[in-house]
Image (cartoon, rainbow, N blue to C red; front, side):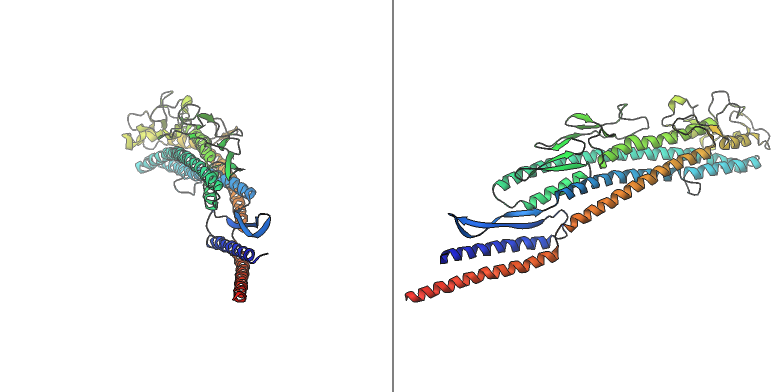
Length: 487
């Protein structure tokens, strides 16, 4: 090897170790930066005309475990869906509640029951009749409030769907742009690690919305596919479409045309069921909340409302009420028709004839809704009948329940038990998903930047740099010696 070749090789060594020190310092500085992947300088022998000429920096690689990232993304999507489900079912359980929870339907039923007992013991006491009217309004209002809350949850989910779809479209377009930039810069030989970090963070945000798989392509390109088979990005990005609805009523569904479904590239796709291409992420969870969970919860409330209305409008309960006329509880003041069960919980109201707040008279709770004048103040027969109507065993007219007769409180307890069981199952699923996501995230972090290892590498780099500098110093001394010999 000539002196000039030795000097050239040492200079390449200094350049390579300098690049290693630069990348290592970036690793240490970004050890806790979300989405940052550890970098490593790739070195190779520099060859010129078949002769070794030192070392060459081939490039900078990102140290990532793509399999682990894909699994973490799937877990992230699943965690988002399960969390939404558990949260909503918890709200439903709280709304129905047990008698010891103030403001719950269970507490309102108990209050109404107690007011009837007290009024029947002193039918002449107007204050006790007033408590019956107040408890009846409260019970009807509780059903209405629970129904309104469920419909508001559907509206909120609908708005969040629109927001997620906008985020999805914007993110896919940004990844498409990054793919183009990466292809250009990779071809030009630039270090594109920072752009790849940015792309990974955007893909991570998408994976919470829909479960996906990332497939590498040449020139640092990637393609994205949902686990259900829809192409999100493999060239131009897919386009998702959704139209939000400002107001949602119980009758509104996708099937009825009242609510928007999801379209991909102009074609409708299923948002639920095993055939859904977006199943398993936050987007699917929001659709399930709006179209399935909330609809089922509304159906339970409507069944309660129907049972309550029918109990107090049964033939013979109040002799002053004509057949077919509304009883103590009404469908917005009118008699209930079975074909109008959907949404009844949001329309149920106390009969205005016995409600002073609506211009009625309290004595009609004692003497009958159709009474035009007050009867004997000590007559408690109707109040006793109302009490029996509430607590008596009666078959349920609505479907979806185990056959058999039950009191109204037992019906509420059955619905609460069902809601609690669903919530507990959802909590269990959510806890498992959260634990799995945490475990996978921790594993991913373990494969990230280890500052201790980086500092050890720094010592090696320092020694290599010093060795190459020593070679240069030795070559310098040799050249000086040669010059001295010539003089």
